[in-house]
Length: 186
Image (cartoon, rainbow, N blue to C red; front, side, top):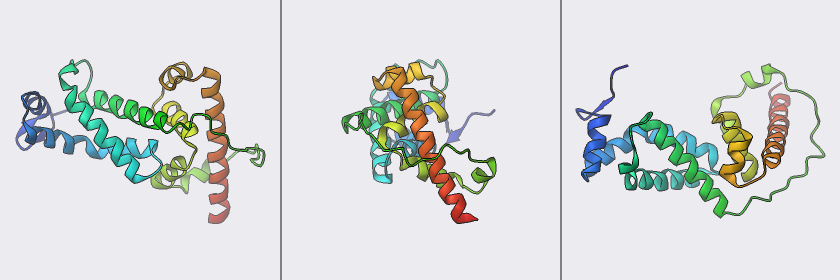
């Protein structure tokens, strides 16, 4: 894979320039990754403005701590990790860690794969964004980012059993919402 070049400079050259305080290089790095990273922010936020705040706070951290990037792995992966950690910290400040939603009305039936084929990525992202904060965080970290319940419990400072429970409840809520959409679509 050939290196990505923006304004005649590779990522490596841009990062070196950023370390020397080059604001244009920072702008180029931001534009290089803002789209992909905004997609991650949207998954963790309740609305677009919150996602934009997460993105902005994250890139401030990226440029503030750029000297700590050791070129072990990809720069994109390093930025992604900062985005996720920033989203978690912002979410924890909101103190929604003890949310509860009554799940008694949700049926245990299964949703067939044909239901997911009628949903666009945007619709599915919207459904995920409507989850209560704790459920959304655990769902994103487990189902999308691939972290284990042990890792999630350490990241969110919760018990592993809480992580499992919130994932189960998030899946049930999503299943109910998808079933409702499926009924409307049919």
